[in-house]
Image (cartoon, rainbow, N blue to C red; front, side, top):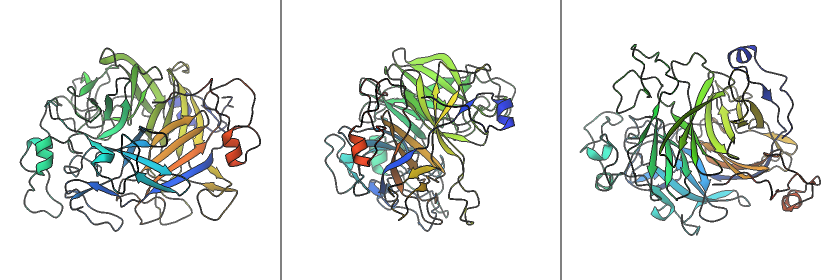
Length: 479
């Protein structure tokens, strides 16, 4: 991709980070499908410790919300995807009864809908039943600390007070994992079919079989840069440990919800690259996030770390996925939601972008160099894919958290929001956000040779310049 030096970079970021920012071509909205916010799967009662929001009342009797998508993988059949829900309702205390699940879905972009499917065959289902999901569990007692399933009652107090609530018998019998045990935010599928999850409470790497059953003790993150904690205490913790880490005995050096928000698997499928969502508390550069390399063959971290520079210390990352062995995409976002033109949004969304990095390209200060791929607050929609009755207009993705990006080919990305059901309302004030699946067209993600000959996508979308070409000799990695 040929990019120009970005003309606007804050002086603070230049001084603190020093990595040049490169400008991108505008992305175009190609497809959009929506899964309603009030979508539920079979399971035990949930939300007994969570406060409702946006008019939604908890708990959810004998069901689990299908929400909070924080990662996406290709499904078993073309056109299907696996989407991973995060810890449930936002933190350890309110997610005791939220099961950790991965759902199989099929977006129907012609109809604008998303339906559950059988995770093996891709056959459409009328409801989110056990055919459509896996639930993480610890049947072989690999987790070395107490989990919710080990107790007789849930560890938190119900909303509104009252007596302790017995742990659901299904959770106990099958040692199902909940959002009080781990906060999973990323998932990758290894070449052997096993699954790796990135957790925020530890942060840990969690290794399961294809059915979500834990295979080995969760793997902690060493403090390779030996950064001291600023959260109290003088001893340097040899591990990176969040405040909620259940095994921590030394001062925490990572804020809660700061663990592995993004995790990429390289194209050779030999290494994981786990990206922290927040800076380590002892890092003098607050705009820097660390990427840690993990060898799947050796089952351990290699000790190599890379520094990703955020545009602001108040930003966070949303997802991290591979293009090649060294090139990756990262979603970087602010914490705002809604649009600035609606005064009811006190903290509107302003910064939601996708960048490309290359581990072989760093600046003089050791920071990865970023190339902007797409501005999710400025997506071109000339064909009114959004369905708002307007053409030659801008489509925005104004959600608090956008945590899913999947490479479809060298010019197309699937992007999904995390709707934090029922708490987030970025599309319409006071209304719980749906799960939106969008496909956007970008400039080529990888440099490719050859002419610009029209392809199927050009005919479908009416392009005349050959920009829909899918270069068979230059395709990005796919899981």
